[in-house]
Amino acid sequence: MFIKSIAVISALLGSLIIAGCDSKEPSDVKEPNDIKVGIVVGAEKQLAEVAKKVAKEKYNLDVTLVDFNDYVLPNEALNKGEIDVNAFQHKPYLEQQIKDRGYKLAPVGKTFIYPIAAYSKKIKSPDESQIAGATNDSTNAVESPDESQSESQIAEANDSTNKKPLDELLQPGSQIAVANDPTNLGRSLLLLQKEGLIKLKEGVGLLPTVLDIVENPKELKLVELDAPQLPHSLDDQQITLAIINNTYASQIELRPAKDGLFVEDTSSPYVNLIVAREDNKDADNVKKFVQAYQSEEVIEAANQIFNGGAVKGW
Image (cartoon, rainbow, N blue to C red; front, side):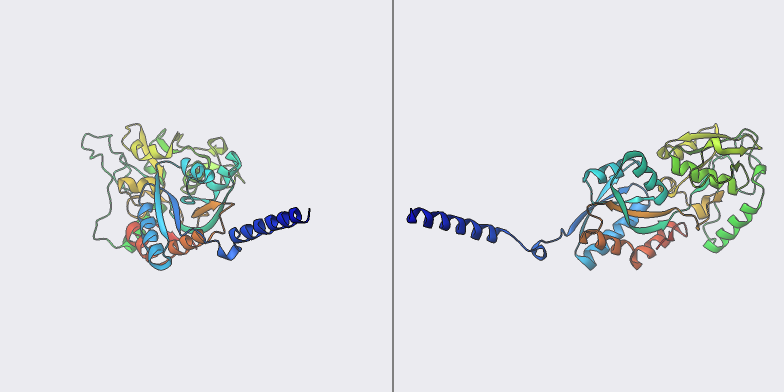
């Protein structure tokens, strides 16, 4: 009996020793030193490439960029744990996605404000009331300021354009293409109201819909499209202009400060975000990537790539 008791005690002690060897203090558990970042294809990816380089050089963080071609899949992939963070959306869009889809996501850092703008291949220049296509000598190309102009000259020209009544540029019943997702549709409608083309109900906030339009003196027809289709809509003979955000405008080399007929204020609430999940928002690799993105190197790259079309949001 005594021998059996000794054997049992020895077995218990052995198991405790083994368990003790296997256990690790929290400080012994290493944080991952790599990260997968979801990016929507476009000029903003170039900034992510710079952030990737900074992350490696300053924090020894290995960054893998995962490309997406729309605004839905990056949040879906993040919520499923297929990527660690994404960097493509503003707060109103994220909040709407969380509300609609029940995602457990959280913003962890700000990037840049990318003003949306109206572009056209039918209106040959902001100063013309003649619509291209109404005559046989239309060029079907977006006219731009001379390349030798400085950014201040371009901005001054745009300011002058914004002061001119835009109803001189648009024929009655003109079709305007806008994004069909709630946040970017609302953003487009607010821009149209700012330019005096429509009037919205009082107190609609950041998410107005076409049902909130109370005045439309030119009887403009709004054509709602998926955001990736908006650049292609410029070639549609029925579309006079399209309101496009920087992600997709940059894919056809359009810049708001240079090519936009009218441009959103940079004081808008639509600063873009780096977003993680609720369960990894405080992870070390996430913090390192945010620091890399908010570096001077990325700011300099944004100034070069977007020529004033990206404003630091932090």
